[in-house]
Image (cartoon, rainbow, N blue to C red; front, side, top):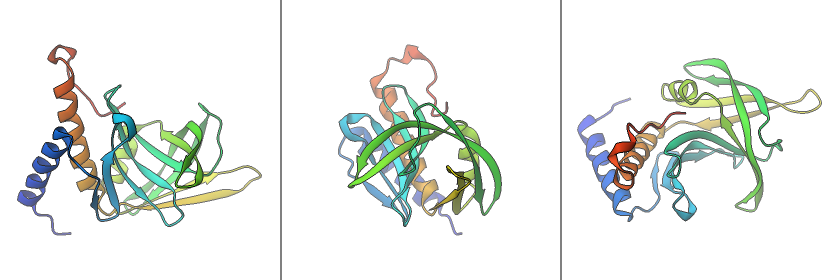
Length: 183
């Protein structure tokens, strides 16, 4: 893949300025979208698969932290942990997802939200890949496979994270120390 650093850096500066100014409308990077969450809760970089499931990084202004989340119709009990097998074109590993809540209504569908327990591990896995899949155990010895394109992830998450960090630095006193996007 041909990557043009000067153009990419120029985009990051532009995106950061637009987010900070509060005038940024949702943007698209290949299969990924970047935008603001409702009620100024924070920013996101996310994608939808063909089945309407959502996968992305969501950064919350109140906590100053970012989470990798999946929104799916698979019901869960809030706070429960579930093992999953993650597979990418760069390798596979086991991960853990935690039921973060639900049911919610999203585009007319009932959705439950899951967060990944290890932000760093998932982050390093998806940033090296172009495709991401999860095998998720369900009730009655069944499995579901959730697949997502990572085309555009690097540009989307980089722009969103830069804008998020910039917005935090403008709203928090410098005495609070170093800000982080990891858990």
